[in-house]
Image (tube, rainbow, N blue to C red):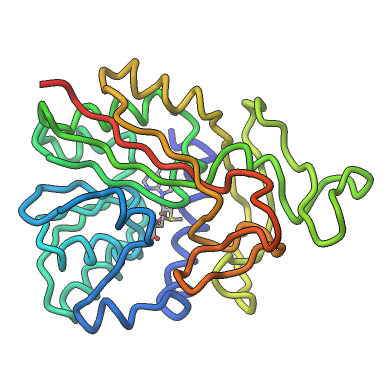
Length: 276
Ligand SMILES: C[S@@+](CC[C@H](N)C(=O)[O-])C[C@H]1O[C@@H](n2cnc3c(N)ncnc32)[C@H](O)[C@@H]1O
């Protein structure tokens, strides 16, 4: 039986594909110079010649950027329209990459290929859609060859406690700041009906229900360790890849930061390696 969280989230992501094909800046990719954010660029190292599995690849923009950097990349996502868009984009720009439709938790069955990837890559807006963080970590460990590594970057869970849509104005921060939104240690899904999209203010989604999950930093790291990986670094950043709050401003490096002081970490990134 398909669970409610998966059905709702997939419908929501299916609908965002057309929006993001318009709103994502794909010009660098089309010009042959697809780029990651400065955070990944500084931390990832040379990917040329590596076999990479990109989990939750969406329309394939980062997958194809990694391919343009010389990697052999497989992108995986549960949204069939997203994977179709990724394949179309690959064909349009003439870049070789493999794209697979699969739910993340079904990926070991759908893809097979245990212990065969040099790098599992997954970034920006991924685990908030996944209810089981231990299962996520086991999927990653399944695919990494001995000595292979996970690179992961995402919104910091401490920042995800806050939102512009704070539940109670009485506990808002200073004017213009986000307010308290969801408890850090809440294990129940955050079920929201929201027609908006983060990359296009004008877009309105009809598949508006989503189920999201906040995973504490310790739970994420412990899940990776329990799955057998060794943590190599864990970095916290005062910058993030999308406009998490309206109070943030976009820098010339395309990252969003607090205007005055680095109040909260906005993102974190880590590398974790399969022993061997
Ligand atoms: C915010 S996007 C990731 C975007 C990517 N970082 C980018 O910039 O293109 C989240 C992706 O996760 C996918 N997703 C959500 N839940 C999933 C699941 N259970 N299995 C596989 N993919 C999932 C969605 O379809 C969506 O493409």
